[in-house]
Image 1 (cartoon, one colour):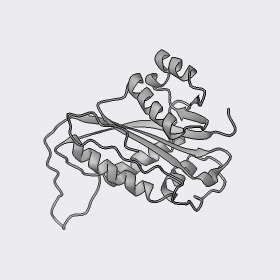
Image 2: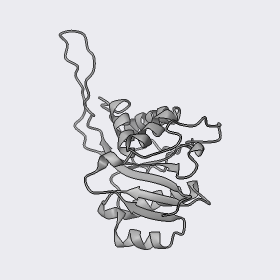
Image 3: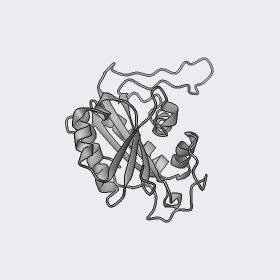
Length: 216
């Protein structure tokens, strides 16, 4: 493994127009109600959270992608192409699970041509080792909680707000990384300059009929 690389964890998660039911407050004797259209339209999110193996002072980095439908090998390669631009000139060790699209013949052939990228596999049934799982949990407990949107664009807007919230607080992504049990020095986020840390570039398409692009 390259000892001067970015260690990047990648994971995918799904969201839909069906609300993420969470506990909430209501006046005594009045049960909260969510009204929605029972629409099963789905979108998928991919998040890649990383830190530098020898220089944590460079802060955490987050790449985020949102698209209608689900991810296959072709869509994941598009995500990795965006990561290649984001980490231009850097070496990356990408850690992800055993999803078939992660280790398909087409994926392995593409990775074999990438001199900047090394793949590592998480143990089976060990989501607690992937810090991106905590990012999903944070979004679904806050911005996506009890959201009964009419269109996938409503989900995209709420997700954008959540990513901005996480992006604005370096302690959050750093805590996601530390929660995995990784030994990171310093254990708390460094004092970042304005030009360091998480990339703040958004490309959002809010029309359900137009493919979305990379959003961070």
